[in-house]
Image (cartoon, rainbow, N blue to C red):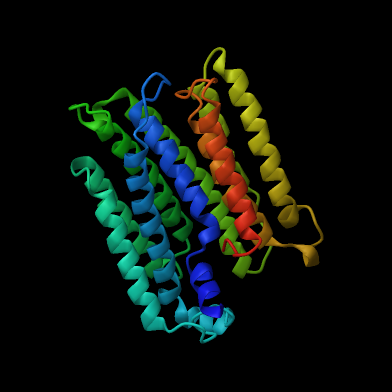
Length: 306
């Protein structure tokens, strides 16, 4: 049981639902989904399996790369505590990433290129994040590339011969990826502060609000009302998550709790992003996003998100 829990902790599996949510968001945007066409869920399953493999493998390699730092600062982590051997973590991480890349590169072309960029960005983050002050930008780039890769995956599934970045749907997918980049960069700056003492800064919160601004621009006319409602829900969730960092006494601060809530909030950012392409009557798709949100929160009770 100790080994099983160590495997779950190493993979930060409580964040997996946010990966699935990113995949669904990008896939729908890339397809230019309007509700009139059928969805090939088998193709989506290949995307999810591939992205999950790259994510889990990246998380395993993250601990393998950080073993020296964890031995000094976080000796309770699975490798320093002796629950699992470092060589085994390297082997599992490499195997998962290789398997994930197989599924992500199946469509070839632009999708394979974006998958390779994602693969290399994950490795770059793992090897350099403890040495760079701007490492939150690297992990945010991983999410940006995941959205674009998923959108390209969805575009290939439409059967269109036109290059993805020449299609109108590429514009919305790119703006969504940039909005998610800002949100993840903001919460990652906050997460980095968890291990660095000092006064907390408020500017990361401004970054996390950028998806709301993008939603206002992307949802004109009648759709803006729905965008405002979802933006309020996202804003309230952010306030709830951030209160344990900014609005409690210094000795009661719990940055980790804030970051965990904000990580689950990635699903709400995705749901806000797909509003321009998903009709109101397609409530089942919205339910999938909400299930991912609830699953992430439930999983955090058993496996830490950070």
